[in-house]
Length: 276
Image 1 (cartoon, one colour):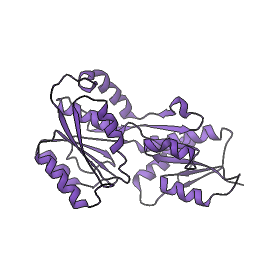
Image 2 (image 1 turned 120 degrees about the vertical axis):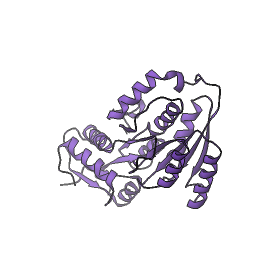
Image 3 (image 1 turned 90 degrees about the vertical axis):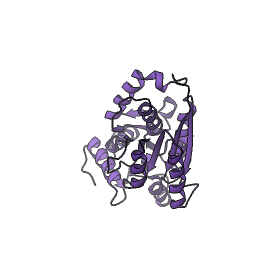
Image 4 (image 1 turned 60 degrees about the horizontal axis):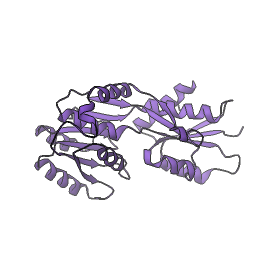
């Protein structure tokens, strides 16, 4: 029996699958986690039939920082849901796969529009440092977009993609911390990255919001990230749209990847399958 759908966890696996796929009867490839800015390119030229992304992380992290600076009590964890896109549904902005944090974020936005609006009720510039350790600086552009919609926010950005030396990135951020920034946003691909830097910022009473991988420590104001089972469930919903009459499915994932394992489990649970 031929393979109908291949579920892959990241863009690197997608590239490998594209290189190995056959001709007209090649399986439809569903990508389980992508940067929001890459969705259209992946659908048009990247070989993906469906793409899942967690679009709100950057905007939510900036908003939590602004609320904390404004003295509002915020949740320490904000696990957000996903959206999945195919060529047929992207004109309608894809389809949502909610998670608990989405509801909390909606309530915060409703209750604190005076702080989060384009013209907030303050007359000072807030300086927010950003350290993005992810491949390709995944969060820099979305954070800049979110800041452009908020009055009186100045972002100071340092990313691994533009400053390859890790020690230099740390020195840069430490200089910003010493210059009295209002908040530090740290985007990481691994849970233990930059723990000491986060702790030093908190010791200076600076708001610290982590994005991406959830830190194991509690030395931060809040964490915002994707609820990984929701990403897997979103991929499953895409499969059901692509192959509504049933399909033979295979999954490609990386070993020792906790987030990927949670996505795989969410994918399997949503389809009533046994997880790989």
